[in-house]
Amino acid sequence: MSASHLDEAGHRLVSDAVGAAEANTSGEIVTIVAERSDGYTDVALCWAVGAAFLAMVIYASIPEFYLAKIDWLLGNWQSDWTLREVLTIGLGIGVAKFIGVMLLQLIPAVKFLLVPGRIKTARTHARATNLFRVGTERRTTGRTGILIYLSMREHRAEILADRAIADKVDAEVWGDAMAAMLAEIRQGRVAEGMVAAVEEVGKVLAQHFPRADDDHNELPDRLIEI
Image (cartoon, rainbow, N blue to C red; front, side, top):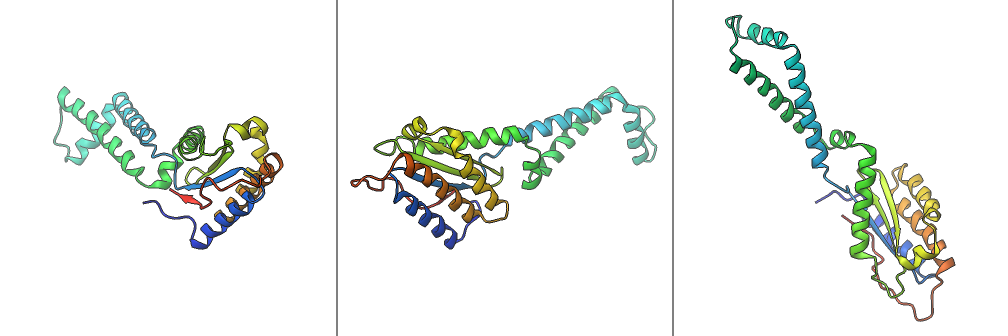
């Protein structure tokens, strides 16, 4: 289970903000905070394979250097190396490098540091889209659901809107909500960042989708942590 980034008071703060925003609009706001958007095992494997291949290439380029070092460690008893021994040493270097890089990436900070930014962005968007399709899209009568998604490890966020909202509001409009959220989060105030985003989104929704007299709550107001 991932560590929680908000305490009970933080959860209540965000949930109350969602309720207040929805009081003025028929839109439904869903908030999700994720520890991460992907495990990036494929990226870790690519780094390990690349490091192993590079190590074996270097060994193949200057085998005498490595063999001399090994010979010295063995007390200079090995005078002639057979082809099998040379190849075995090269393979062993590659395997050792592969294992070493994989073990190094068991440290989360190192693993995420080695993930290219464009991959983090793509995986965050993909996860947000999947969650949106499952929990928000087409879940309201007027298709007025909107997801505010924050992925902590990737330091990225997404705002995705259902069809009725997307038809009236350009995606660029959510830039103010993103900016308000990230300004707070950079200061370590995750709950306040989500609240800022909810308030900005609420303003836009109230303008385009004012609350009707017969409107009722269709999606939960509570913050979801995954």
